[in-house]
Amino acid sequence: MKNIIIGTAGHIDHGKTALIRALTGIETDRLKEEKKRGITIDLGFAYLDLTDGERAGIIDVPGHEKFIKNMLAGVGGIDMVLLVIAADEGIMPQTQEHLNILSILQIKKGIIVLTKRDLVDEDWLEMIQGDIRTYVTGTFLEDAPIVPVSAIKGIGIDTLKQEINKMTREIRPKDISASVRIPIDRVFTVDGFGTVITGTQVEGTLTVGDVLSIYPYKKLSKIKNIQMHGKNVEKSYAGQRVAVNLANVKTSEIHRGDVLAKPDSMYVTMLLDVKLSLLHDMPRALKNRARIRFHHGTGEVIGRVILLENETLKEGEHTYAQLRLEEEVAVKAGDHFVLRFYSPVDTIGGGVVLDANPYKHKRYRADVLEALYVKDTGELESILEQTIKQYSKMLQPIDFIAIQLGKEKSELQQGLESLLKEELIVQISEQVYVHMDFIDELRQTLTTVLMQYHQKNALKTGIGKEEFRSRVFKSEVGKLSTPLIQYFVNEKVIEVNQNIVALAGFEITFTLEEKKYLEMIERQYEESAFMPPYIDALIQTCPKGLKGHLLIQTLIDRSILVKIDANICLHQKRFEEALLKIKTYIRENGKMTLGECRDMLGTSRKYALPILEYLDHQKITKKIEDYRILL
Image 1: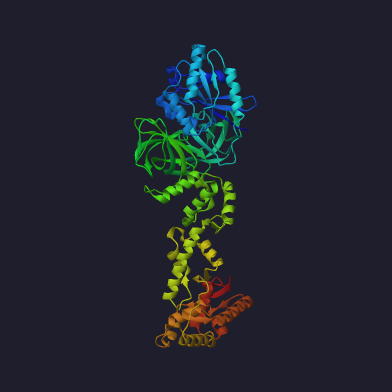
Image 2: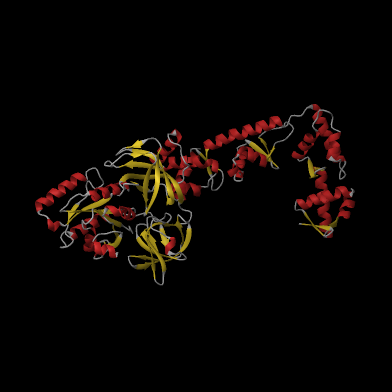
C-alpha cells in the first residue's frame, strides 16, 4: 500500500473545488460561509479511487491570500499536487505564492491543471500553456504535464485521471515502521462518540487501542476508533487521511496545529536551529530578530528569527538561524517549515529543522556554525557522531539521541557499529554511548585530580568515591557516572577498592620509621585478639613527626584492619575468626546473647557490643529483644 495524498493549490476562484467534484463526485465546501461566498475558506477532503485498486486522499486548500495559513495546514503531508490555473486568467499572485510554498516544503511531484478550458479558444490556450511552461522552469514542476480541463463540461477529466494514475505509480511507499505522527487539522464532536480529530498521518502505524500523546501538552489519550474515507478500520498507515476518535479528551483541549504522536517520540520546544532559504521573489530583506510566523505541520506560531551569521538576508539567500518562538511546538529534526513576515503577512521562505532541542546560541560562533553545517550536509553517521559528542557530558541514552535526530533507534544501529569500529565512540552501558573526545578529556581531568590528591595525601591509598565523583563530574551526571568509572577501571587508568579511588598502580611510599610503626600497629592488633587497643590511644604513642591517624587509616584501606566503630579496630584475621565463631554458635543454638558472645570470644562487654552492632549494620546478624539471629 502506497497511501497517497494529493493536494490542490492555486489562486482563488480558479476552480479547485469544482475540479475535485468532477474527479471524485465529492463536495469539499463544508462550511456555510464557503457555500455562501463561493470560495474555499478552510480545508476540504475527498478521495479518488485509482486504477491499481488504491484509494488516494485529496485535500482541497483555499486560494484566497487571507487563508494562506489554512492552505499551509493542508499541504504539509501531501505526496503530489494539482496546481490549478484558470485558462482565462493564467498565473496569479496566489499561484505564485502556493508554488513557492510547495517548493519550500520539498513537494517533488505534481500536475498542472489548466481549468476553465471551455472559456478560451485554442490560440489563447496555447499561449497560456507556453507562459506557464516558462514560469515553472527551474521548479519541481518544470517537466510536469499540463492538462487542460473543464470541470463543468467534463472535458479532459479522464485524461487528468490517467495522468494522476501514472504519477501515483511513481511515488515510493512510505516507511510505516516509524513512530506514528498525525498533525491535527480538524477537531470536532460526534454525538455518541465524543472527540474526533482529523489529519494526514505522516508517519508510522496507528492501531485502535493505542495510547498516544497530544503534543505540545503531552496529554495521553486512548484511540477508540479510526475511520478512513468514512469507513471504520483497525489500523491506519503513513500517507492516509484519518479521522481518530479519542478517549478522555474534550474538543476544547485540542486545536489545529497540535500533534497526535507516540509518547516521548517528539520534542516540545520554543527553540529551533534551522537551515533557512529565502524566496527569489521575496518582497523585502529579512533582518536579524525580525518577527515572523512559523508554519509547521498544521500549526502557526509567532516568533523571532535570529540570523547566526548575517545581519540581513536578501532574496534567494541561505543561512543558518535560530527560531525563538512564543509558544511551544512539537517537531523533529528534518521537518520542513514555512516562514512568513508577521506583518504585512508575506511569505519569506522556509527550510528544514536541523536541531529540535538546541541551546540558546550566541551569534557568529564558529563552533555553532560548524555543527549546523554537519547537521545540514553530513551523512547520518557524521550527524550521529556529532550528536553523541554534543551530549556526551550529559550521558544521554541512545533513545534520547534518536529523538534528537528524528529517527528510530533501529535506524542508528549501523552508524553506531561503524563509529565503534572506528573507535570514535565508546559504549559505556547498554543505552549510553559517548564520544572518544569526551573520554580523552575526562581521562585528563581524572588523572589530574588523582595525581594532585596523591601528592597532597601521600599516606592515603586514595580518594573516596563520592568525593571523586564531585571533583570529576558535573552534578547533573554524577549519579550516572558509575559506568564511566568502570570504563576507566577496565582501561587500567584507575583502581577502585572498597569505595576508594586511586590511580592504577599507585602505592604509598613509606619512610623506614613509618614502616616500623605500621608493623608495630599490625602486630599489636593481631596479638591483642578481641581486646584491641583503642585507636586514639595508639595515636598518642606515635613517634613525633609521624601522622598516626593516617598510618592507621592506611591499614584500614588495605583491609589489614577492620574498623568496628569510631575508636575500635580488629585485625582482619581476628575479625574473620570472630565472625566464624559467632555464625557457628548461632547456627548450633539458634541465637546468641551479648553475654554469650563476650564469653565465647574471651573479651569484655565494651568490645563484644561494638562487634555485634557492626555485624547488625553489615546485615549479617539481627537483634531481637536481647539476642541476635543470623540473617
